[in-house]
Image (cartoon, rainbow, N blue to C red):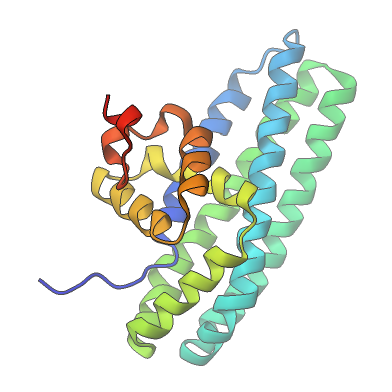
Length: 219
């Protein structure tokens, strides 16, 4: 069996879709009388936006130069779509800010619709990356190059964003994908960092899925 190739998009996009759909469901159920639920929703939308913007920054820095070389037309389309997505992000942030102040049904509905418009635009963007950019990268560059870029992306990602991405990805991943992600991370982390990561992920990952187990976990 041939070794699998690096895919920059598969797991992170699974996590993004998982988070987007979960938030969309919550936004549709929001009751204007539930102030705490609204605050929680806006907080979680803000966290998602921060992760998505960080993801876009990493793409611009590490992937776009490769995509311009391997598929210049797709690179141009992705750049144009980034601008369109940023406009939808701004509209969503404006809607959430108003909803926190006004606390009325029409403003909660505006959040739901702004989020839906953002999701519609973003899902199309993800598809172009998956069916356009990634195949071109695989055809043009060898695995050493791609895996090296992947390591640089992970190293450049802030721990808070990395934890957010993992919490979004793991519930959406297959058991094998989850195990491979954790093994890859643990290979680059020290014992204290692994312990911190495990604690931050809570019950998302069964103990037996961790590649390194201590006596407390085994018990």
